[in-house]
Image (tube, rainbow, N blue to C red; front, side, top):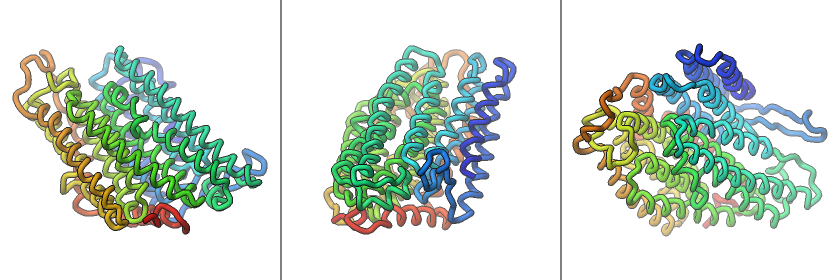
Amino acid sequence: MALCMILLPLLMAAIALLIPVGRGRPWRPWLFPLTAVTQMTLVVITLAGGTLTGIGLGWLDAGVSGDWLVLDPPGRIVLLQVSVLYLFCSFYAVGYLRYRKETANRVFCACLLAFLGAMNLVVWSHHLGVMWVAVEATTLVTAPLIYFRRTRESIEATWKYLLVGSVGIAMALLGTYFLAYSLVHVGLGAPLTMEGLLAHAPQLSKPWVQAAFVLLLVGYGTKMGLAPMHTWKPDAYGEAPGVVGALLAGGVTSCAFLVLVRVTHICQAAGEGVLTSRLLLFLGLFSMIVAAMFMAAQRDFKRLLAYSSVEHMGILALGLGLGGPALFGTMLHVLTNGLTKGVLFLSAGNIHRAYGSKSTDQVRGVFRRLPLSGTLFFLGFLAITGSPPFGPFISEFAILTGSFQLGRFAVGGAFLVLLLVVFIGMSRTVLRAVQGRPPVTAGGSAPVRETLLTILPPALLMLLVLLLGVIIPAPLDALLKDAAAYMNSLPGPGLGGLP
């Protein structure tokens, strides 16, 4: 099943590239829904199958044993979230490319399909080296997507994305080497699989484990967009098409967080839970502070969403740092944040296309000009800022409750205050855009109309976000509890046992 999920999108990407330029432009985008529906079918079969077995690839390296491709409990949550988001984005992409008939879409289609394969590889990887390769692959295949509109700003955003991401991934590679040396330093020859590292974690060299975690946190924190490693996000999210922004904010960041969860789990087993907790709590709160500062006077609503992503990556880091009872809410927040980001970026793409601008100086009266997209954008704003009865409210409340149960009242109080500041700052930009009368010149002489393919996907995503705030289905609740139990399963001074 793992190989099917990884290879199918890559095969579809190859087909998209082989179709002659020009001839397949109208129907090439329909490869997205075909791949996404197949992927979702495989995911349902996989998650319904209970305990999964990994795929041993030890024959690639003499003496290496263990499974390289395994779907662990946290990976199931990320796989579900990424697959659902990609499913709706795939139909939206078909509608979006109809507005770009003059632009060749062969590279765009191939990269967007390969992107799904790279994310699947991250989710299934249980070898630190394979995880690193998979995360780097997501960077390489998404860079051309950011540059799709071929503007001066988009090429600048693409290069910034590549340069900052390359520095981060280089730090992650160095951290992987350090973690490998922590095995060699004590005379162990175990492979860099999760199972091998967890089994030998108590014997790992503590100084090398500590150095490795710092480097891995900075490296994969850059891919997540944690402050101060977030500098690529505002430009990349601001210049990328809305569907690409949705997958960056709900796909790449979730995959990077999953790798960070696995690294933290290893360090927890090695007895370094205090160090990991303090660093995660610091970066989590710091990211929320930075996001709140930049949201306060933000006029570009797509860059606003980028800082919202910084904030929510901080919330995930905060929940992971708290551990224990907060982990259920943390894994739920991976799901609710990813789906809500889909609503916001897809509706924001509709607004940007209709007005030809991202600035609230020109974007006014969205409720009147684009009533459906404006309503979805406003509801997405309410959801992402933790307003009831939407899903992010439940996940953030679960993290807050977990912090109080652990006696972390100062952390919980700071969390509440920052959520309030973010709500106030974000509301200024959103309300400025959706209220009032649209400018006379907005959109030019041929205004863009809302179509079924560009409205139904974010509307259905919004419905899912609302349902997750009302009820968590029993199968999903079981998956979330399994993920939290897995992350808290190790004895010793780990995250879950911190005072």
